[in-house]
Length: 87
Image 1: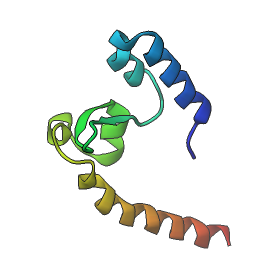
Image 2: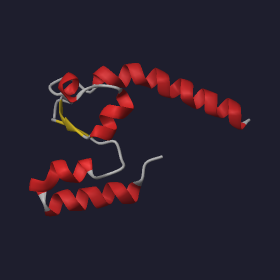
Image 3: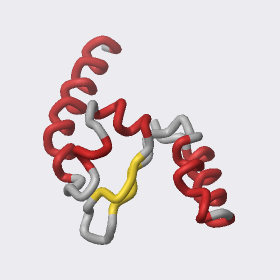
Image 4: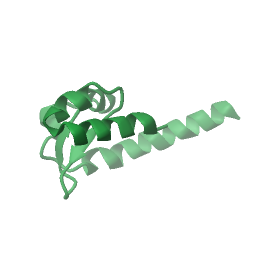
């Protein structure tokens, strides 16, 4: 589940202090990535890297699709496992 309050707090903090962008995204508990208009990674926080198991240099300059397709399968499997446990 996405923490909308935390997302809004980050957006306001970045809008108020864009020069502190890197510190702001590192200080959040959320996984944050930043892409350009073409979907190419230009930044991310350590939480995002830890979740996906990549190093920063492996992701910068690459398309976000490098993780979407592979991890969509993992996410779908996780939801299936959760739904089976809940039932």
